[in-house]
Every structure is written in C-alpha cells, then in structure tokens.
Length: 231
Image (cartoon, rainbow, N blue to C red; front, side, top):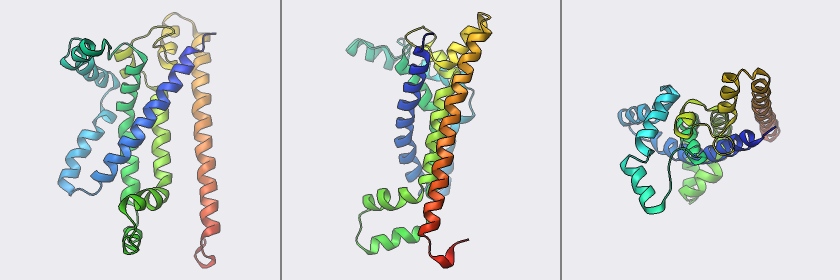
C-alpha cells in the first residue's frame, strides 16, 4: 500500500496550519481593535473563503497563480518554479480555505479578553509584546487551540481547491481526499474505505487530544483559583 497520500496530506495540513496560525492571529488581533464599520468590511473579505465553494476558491487561485498569469509567469521566468500542479500549491489552497476558521476563532477569543489585565500590566511598565505573548495569549489559548485544530482538520480533508490547483499525480500531489475520489471512480471501494478510515482515525485522535488538553487546563485553573471562587 502506497502511503504517500498520508504523508503528503499530513505535511500539507501541518504547514498550512502553521501559516494560518500566525496570519490568523495577526489579523484577528488588529481587526478586533478597529472601528465597527471597518471591522465589518474586513470581516467580509477575510471570511469569504469560508462560505465560497472550494472549487470557486481553487478557480481564483488558478487565476492568480497559473503560469499564464502575470504572477505565475514572472515566478517561472525568474526562478523556473511553477506555482500550481505541485504539493506546495496544495499548501496555499489549504491555507486559504482554513484561514477564516483560525481568524474567526482567534478574533472571538481576543474580543473576550479582559482588558483590565492589559491596563494592569501597562501600569507595571510591561511592553505590549510581553503583554501579548505572556498574558493575552495564555488567557485566550483555548480559543487559539480550537482554531488551530479546526484549521488542521480543514487542511487535512480539503479536496475541492487542492484538486484544482494541484490535480492528482500519484507520488507527487496525491492526498487522502483525492485518493479516495480516484479509487471510488475506479470502483475500488475497498481501497477508498481504507483511506476514509485512516482520515477518520487521524481526526478522532486530534480531537481527543484537544479534549484532554481542555480538561487538563480546566483542572489546572480550578486548582489555581482561590477557594472562595470555585464552583
């Protein structure tokens, strides 16, 4: 059994999750502080990939990255690199479709942050960088982790956008999702079922790990809370 689709899907999901983690936090942090009107406009733009069909997202990516486009032709002329029909383009597609999940979840967590903690830290002379990483991020970590897990799961199971920008080439661009579809078209239901179960197993393990983390985090907070505030 060729395990390349498993390895390829995992690296695509991991790399795209790292990308959307930092981009999602960056945009969520700054958009959360904007005026309502501007925030609403940016929300529409940044969340659009979540509501668009994946094939439409893939189409727009092809219009941006294909060799015939200005960007695609410029990159190919200067570095002889193709921006589509390779596994790296699957990373880009997965990052685009998963970004809104990380952004929306992180923004909700930041908007729920107790600003009195920030003001208290500022009165102590702490820098904004220190406040963000050592106070705000730990406070919002449950929302951040939830967004990261959702992004990973979205990247792992993405099919529509990735199939358009990367296609299906065994040993090069094949993922679990595209492999399932190809096996199904070949009437290999047994092979398709195996890959479906592998995907389900990975997703279940990830969700179980997050649930265990949240439970441990709640127990830690409960032990750290003053006796009179518990319950």
